[in-house]
Length: 223
Ligand SMILES: [Zn+2]
Image (tube, helix red, strand yellow):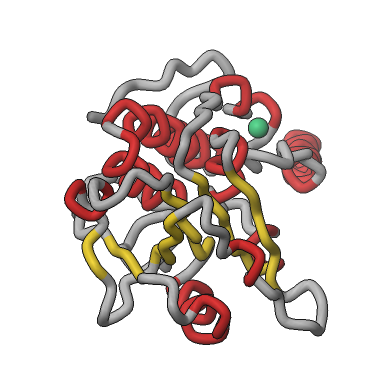
């Protein structure tokens, strides 16, 4: 009888501990699994602007925050936190050739030919979050109606996913940015961002008890 009671109270303690865990505000992993020290610093000509819904920011599976932390030339605009619609007109400057990263019917492939058309640096406006949220940025922001839509057709080669519903390409935001910047800036940039993405996925799975590992877990290259 006593043994059972001890066991039960231990279980309770465990659950309580789990509840009060304190995730890192950037990678959203628990502190022992935090990957923020290994986030690369990439100072690129290409600018990335993430358009994120306020609800998406609360999700632990969000990867846009990691992209933002890695990319010096980037910013985030938050939708849905006030009643007034977000106005993105100021993003449309002559300093950049701006593209909206969204696979609309008239979207063109983001490839080397497109990049080589002019020497003006590129700005990628990236809707962060689910397909539904990305579609809203595409359809509701009329100030962006003349911004060319671009897409990538690279198949998603990841073994694991952080959530069922990703961006339209079937990728997480960080993956999509990695592939897009890979085309514009080169493979090294893509590899560094994909390594960060893989670290986020693997540590998330460890945190959920779905992969074996621990505090000293060494990440393995998955490609
Ligand atoms: Zn962290």
